[in-house]
Amino acid sequence: MIETYVKILSNTCITPGIFLLRFSSPGLAAEAKPGQFIMVRVNDGIDPCLRRPFSISGTEEEGVVRVLYKVVGKGTEILSNKRAGDRLSVLGPLGKGFDITDPGQHLFIVAGGIGIAPMFFLSQAVNKKAVTFLAGFRRSDEIMDPASVGIKQDISIATDDGSMGYHGRVTDLLEQEIIKQRDNAIAIYACGPLPMLKALSSISNKYRIPCKVSMETFMACGLGACQGCVVRSASALDQISYYHVCKDGPVFDINEIDWDNI
Ligand SMILES: Cc1cc2nc3c(=O)[nH]c(=O)nc-3n(C[C@H](O)[C@H](O)[C@H](O)COP(=O)(O)OP(=O)(O)OC[C@H]3O[C@@H](n4cnc5c(N)ncnc54)[C@H](O)[C@@H]3O)c2cc1C
Ligand code: FES
Image (cartoon, rainbow, N blue to C red; front, side, top):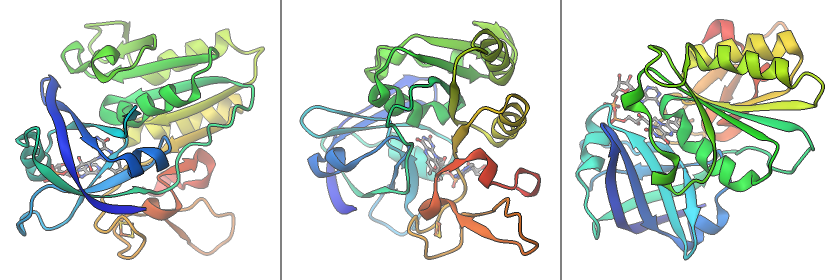
């Protein structure tokens, strides 16, 4: 793990409200695994005082790290106003990422909204043919072109309003695709909003398909010290136990989480 000041190379709006940040950090780029994240201090003042967590969305040659983020509040608004040449304090890579050793299965990469950020890095890293990448958005104007983040990968799109691609939830599209692949060994790796992850839990159990998910919870420290990010584990024991998403995750086997109590 590295705590360092990095120099911003670019910070570009690629679709309304969504920015691609690129900065140079050879050490971080060399260590980063898909599914891991960084904690970013968005300014040197005290407001906001907490770092903000962002997935690593990809790396480039010469030690460049990519972060794809959506502007939702004060921290991301401040970040979106940074320019090339500005410096940022960054801590990472943090957490446990996706296992990318090839188990020979057909891999479904499933993303919902800005949950696509770590999945771009994953698709860059797995680099095999037996991958189906599905991404769901509310509307077509939220979709980002994979080429704009340096990814050459076909992605099947689902939109809630039917303005592009499959009309409906990405999890419904996934079920259709799973049925086509029934004779093959399949695994699902996913990141997206909570309702999507809950739907994936049902699909994973219904078709008995292994599934790993990257979770996004509120995080204060990102290091396992504050309890800010805990979720209940699906422990078979009577006693309740918790995971720190920042340290034990953010990637979990879907059956490790108690989805009814989140
Ligand atoms: C491990 C991890 C990886 C993440 N990766 C990315 C990423 O790659 N790209 C990206 O755009 N975002 C990512 N996020 C979410 C990102 O951290 C938050 O959007 C950001 O911290 C919001 O900061 P803010 O100051 O702009 O918003 P705030 O002012 O803090 O909050 C604004 C709104 O966003 C909601 N919000 C804030 N944080 C979260 C969160 N963690 N989960 C759900 N809702 C939240 C709040 O409820 C509020 O409605 C990730 C979160 C985690 C935990
Ligand atoms: S964010 Fe502090 S313990 Fe996880």
